[in-house]
Image (cartoon, rainbow, N blue to C red):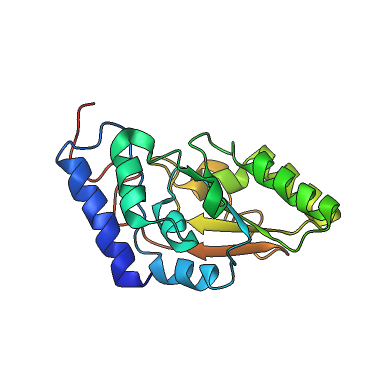
Amino acid sequence: MDKNQLIEFENLVAQTFNNAEIKAPIHLHGGNEEELINIFSNISKSDWVFSSWRSHYHCLLKGVDKDILLKDIKKGNSITLCYPEEKIYTSAIVAGIVPIALGCALGIQKRKEDQNVFLFVGDMTSETGAMSEAYKFAVNKNLPITFVIEDNSKSVCTDTKNVWGIKELSLRGLPKVIHYSYDLPYPHAGAGVRVQF
């Protein structure tokens, strides 16, 4: 899937949400298409992807059919999309997917399988204790996991670095970590029009 196809899909989701056709929260991607296309060029079909509530692009790039994805979003599952057949799982709980991804990587290592885990988190989640402990365990055990920090400088409507009083994210630049920054063209949640559920 190319950049224009990703943008077209997310614009459709935004329009569908603003037309009150989706009866649950959504968190849209945008402004990070090229970064994700590049990252997913190194993710194979047999690899596992774990993500948070902002995961539409991850699902599409992992191979989830766009019509199935849109149907599930319309059903209200936008922030908890799981497709075992495509090896992608998401969670709406802050840092909730972190230990699950870590456990998957540990299982792969113990079974001596040739797979990798890619864990996508936002900048605020990257600063949580759960993430810090997972990262330390993964590095010390040399687990087959890559932590991808998608930094839009937001946690809900606050700037992550200001909240923690830091100049740079704690894990940025470390082994097993991919970090990129982007400007999200949508609000933290929704698509710009207040929708009553």
